[in-house]
Amino acid sequence: MLTVNAIAATSATDPLVRTTIERRDLGPRDVLIEIRYAGICHSDIHTVRGEWGTVPYPLTVGHEIVGRVAEVGAEVGKHAVGDRVGVGCMVNSCRECENCRSGQEQYCLGGNTGTYASVDRDGTITQGGYSTHVVVDEDFVLRVPETIPYASAAPLLCAGITTYSPLSHWNAGPGKKVAVVGLGGLGHMAVKIAAAMGAEVTVLSQTLGKKDDGLAFGAEHYYATSDPATFETLANAFDLIINTVSAPIDMAAYLRLLRLDGTLVSVGAPPQPLPVPVFALFGNRRSFAGSSIGGIAETQEMLDFCAERGIAPEVEVIDAAAVNDAYERVLSSDVRYRFVIDIDSLR
Ligand code: NAP
Ligand code: ZN
Ligand code: ZN
Image 1 (tube, rainbow, N blue to C red):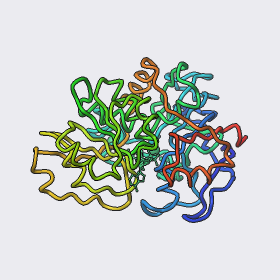
Image 2: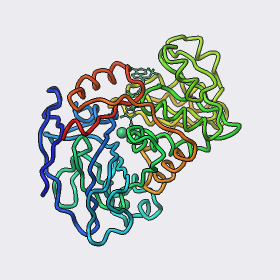
Image 3: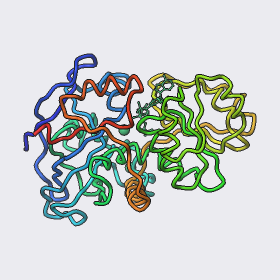
């Protein structure tokens, strides 16, 4: 066992605190990663505040992890000491069900093993990336191209793949009109990736305050959802809407923005239900869908795509001591556009 420095939540209401956690001994197929940067995803906040259900406190969250391989088990063949690698939202799955066999481990029928707050194969509770080291099965470790700036690579492991996967599945590309609702961590990556895929991108944000940024990320249009006229102007306009909002939205209002056979995909995960009036689906034969992160092979494809296209998240690097303040800023939509913890501040 390796005892390592970490930050943990001890309850739904107390601030996160510095602590130590245990990492398992290296198994034959395990990789020990010295973590360098860890992104702060809104899912970390939903989780530690108990919004999604019971939490096994104390809990270390963080599932946007990049670092270097420090040690490998005897049978590891995919990664070598010194490699720049990443870990996203899962660290294992059953590998046998039809979804795992088709490379969709995120939809493992037995439930994938989450990077934190899941029961690991040894019965312990998994602990996430706000820590100096992590031990992960080599099959769930990604190669992070050296051309992606180090700190900016971290958010690709969740925000990047969570937006790339539905954009790819629903064929965002030339001739397609894509709207992105919410310009936060996921939203800004959705804009960059959809634009790189060749789609015509529109941002739907609460205000016009981040318009210059949105256009710089590749959007062609930018509207404020606080202005009711937006919903008149954009009626029947989009092939695909990616909703990244962490709170409930008015589903009827957004569904009416879809053209014939358009789809609204929610990746935003508010704890409350999103009620859908069925008549909003009848018009234009619209669909409402959800999407969860992406498979391991697809995550590698996304990392390579971002490296080739020179796409990287916009990050604000913070010390571990600033995590609680960063959470408050995320909650007030004051994030531009992802906080990333410099894990050296934990050593
Ligand atoms: P984030 O950085 O906080 O971005 C969310 C954005 O939504 C905000 O920047 C804001 O954008 C908008 N927003 C926030 N509150 C709002 C409200 N009350 N009404 C309207 N708009 C609001 O969060 P994130 O890390 O991108 O995560 C977004 C959501 O995706 C979270 O619920 C998270 O748990 C979920 N998630 C899901 C998956 C998955 O696999 N499906 C993966 C990762 C995260 P504007 O200021 O531009 O309006
Ligand atoms: Zn996440
Ligand atoms: Zn499975």
